[in-house]
Length: 198
Image (tube, rainbow, N blue to C red; front, top):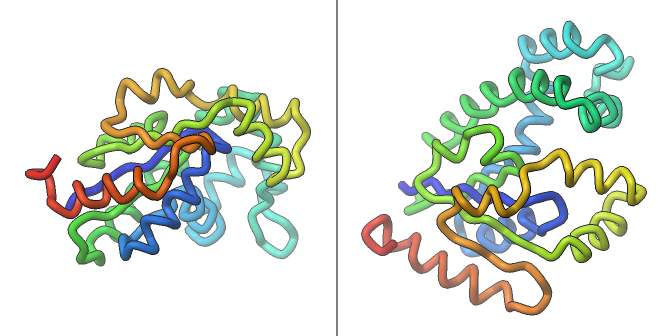
């Protein structure tokens, strides 16, 4: 079974592309969703998060306060590294466990920080999704109701596409000019053939 990483900067539409692969019958592991779930349910991880970021990390109901965490880490590189150091090992272990339960020719691991976290090394191949910056900002303003300054800070906290491209094997252009479906079908066909078809 091939493990295919799917990544791209915030606002590039990688989750939408993951959903299209899922419609083709391919299991998709959404690492960012898994991370949030693990932060809320893994007792050891919760304890480490509270020790590192304070009791406000969780609400009085015991739910993860994602806004609090986001405010803590987005403009503080040291805090972001601390968060990643705590969360990434738990996600890697969860991904391994999830993979052992799949029975398809290939699976996808969708993750914003696939390259930055080093978890692309767990994958046989990596797909990078690229979109023009103006389009990414437009999507994020619509989706997140964030202001321009917050969006630019979030984009700046991620590795630039040029750097990600050096480690990616395949590229999907989600720029509203190139059709998405043919790009996805072409990759799907290759991956179904296994590593011999690539």
